[in-house]
Image (cartoon, rainbow, N blue to C red; front, side, top):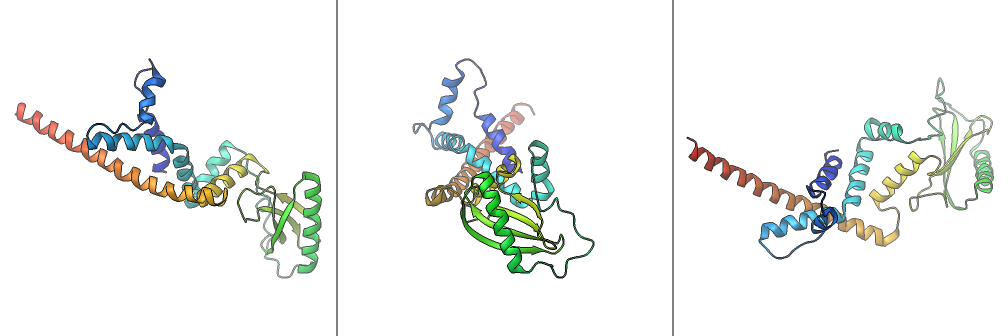
Length: 242
């Protein structure tokens, strides 16, 4: 959460303090001038690297909150901004867990395939592979999952149909783009874990880890330098004003 806030604070600190010739003055923040002292080079690199990778830094920060505090913070905040639809959670929990479904696993699989094919015909998506069929005893439903052309994450089965384990009724269909909040959540997860974009993006994501480490080190150097300067100034002030 501090990292997310720091993204906006850091961005603000790169902005010129005057509007006159704003873009020309801000342009220097995006460049690294190799002339000057080691400290100036360190400062220029820290500022420019942070700007060029700012969007990705924010994505990694937000997705980290999502992975660590999803139910407590991320999901409620996202739900306040965008609609989120969770088909399974919308089905009420039974008074007691379902011990034995009336549908056999073979019947549930056949019914799941039929419902998925019907949804595919209506919404014009293709199925890459079927992944799993699971029984939610708390709600008394089967959940049939496939990897489809609607999916965002590579090799993930995020297209699902939900059917009653009692009579096979269609209780819902869900996919990553069913609501805008779902799509944002899925994209953040995919970008954080490298499950989108193939090998090129995974290499880029690995390099971002190095960038984060370098920004941390250069940031500490800037802080230490400014802290030392403030201490020296304070000592001089005390000498002059006993």
